[in-house]
Image 1: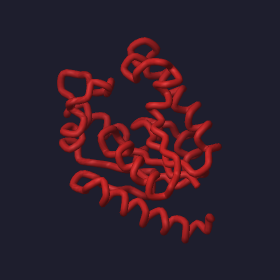
Image 2 (image 1 turned 180 degrees about the vertical axis):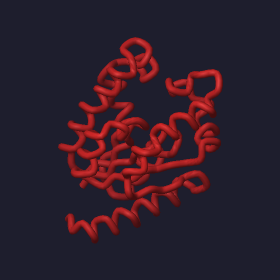
Image 3 (image 1 turned 90 degrees about the horizontal axis):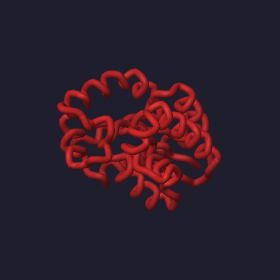
Length: 174
């Protein structure tokens, strides 16, 4: 059993993912954290020293590793499913759900963090809107979506559980 949480930064993937994993008694994996451990540097350092293209290749490698794992809840990187191959692999190997939020909410949730390399720009809110617009066609390929803008972590977790049980019923997986 694999649950993949996709979506933009600041939508709650890691926070909610930890709680979902606890509820289902599964292992939680934050893909960005795993890449940082493997590379021995932070995501901003990877972007600065090796470039975004390199980072996206690392994401692809991790997707291929994770689809072989069992009983995991994974917080994917915000851009992971922009890659068509990643999205198809994830859809075929588990339950993928997109967490989304309003741009202003994302900005409020992420503005104090320095580990968001794509937002280290003069107008981060505009950058959020621009990135969301670019990623929207990819994000919309995920059929199960939850807007986390005005919900608690517990509410989002309960909704994910409901949607997962519905998925299991209709997919006939064990």
